[in-house]
Amino acid sequence: MDYGKYKYEAAQRAKDSRKKSTNIVVKELKYRPKIAEGDFNTKTKKVRKFLEDGHKVKLTIMFRGREVQHPELGRRILDRVAELMEDIAILEAYPQLDGRNMTMILGPDKKAMASLRKAKVQQQRDESDQ
Image (cartoon, rainbow, N blue to C red; front, side, top):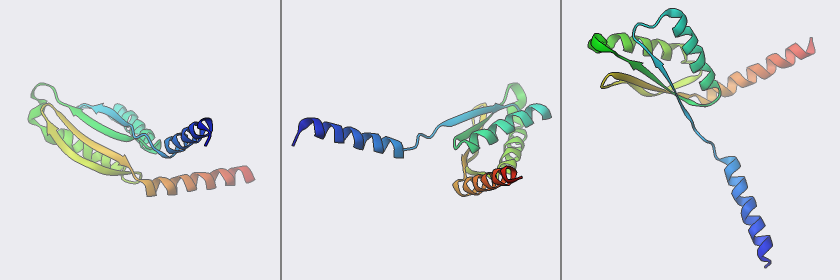
């Protein structure tokens, strides 16, 4: 067997295996307990975009000073984000308090994402037909 041919085929197999693998990225967004409504909406739109791109999202509530005595405020924000994202995301890690930070991890829901993509494709076809 020719060594050059062997080396070429090994490189092709390695290339194919890299194509099939997926690189999972965890994006992080930080909220504060006293976040304003506009800021909340902006960050939540960013969470949706990350999930639609197939990334996991780590949500962090940062407490300062005496705010840590009221973890229910942070929990309320995380629950609200999870509720808004329930159509495209699954809850991978429930909210938990780590020192002065409360974290939660959302992952993309593959089945919901597939149905959303099909709906988008159908909508684009309908628009192009008109």
